[in-house]
Length: 236
Ligand code: 1GP
Image 1 (spheres, rainbow, N blue to C red):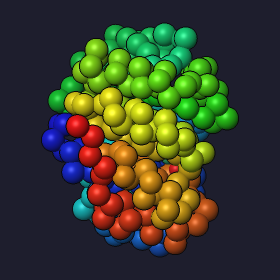
Image 2: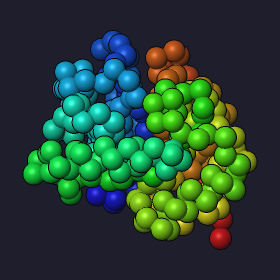
Image 3: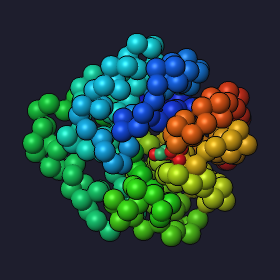
Image 4: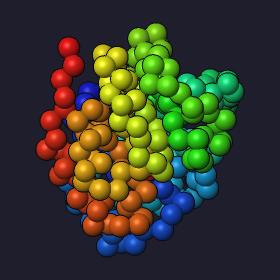
């Protein structure tokens, strides 16, 4: 499964709780993006997730569900990404919800389609930070230490720098980049222009673009080619 995400440079994240017309959805799906990630922090239900999945299934594009609510774990996705929030004092968001899910639905879980994301939440003013009580005021060194917990201690396939709603501090991202050796480094948060997309793409393996889809479709579409043609800086 890890092989499946290796070529992903650009990913659009779609929120089942937000409206997107057919034309806009078509533009997203035909944009040349490498994959769609479906997820959000609030208002995600089984019904709105199924509906969005069935709409995007008209297109030939890998589609992953980022599972944030057990009730919305819909079958039929190519892949399931399971967030584990590392910088929270609340173990519920690290292993608690996961334990309950396995207890209740273990026999239904398609284990071979799951990949765990070591989430480092860095925007205190985001729904995900509020929901998970994440401790977001981290220095670059602290963020990099969390990244190494994910990458080296836990061997997680994905390290996800989540700035949701705010463009991140690129010095922090660079410091994290220098320490992640094995997992795939995802960046998400506040990309609203090609310049921002380029900066994130130079430092990270995979760039996730969300909110701007719902605000400025043209800018969202421009990020695809920018990310895909940006060379990653090399760190040895
Ligand atoms: C959110 O990382 C994604 O989970 C993308 O962030 O919505 O701010 O683009 P934005």
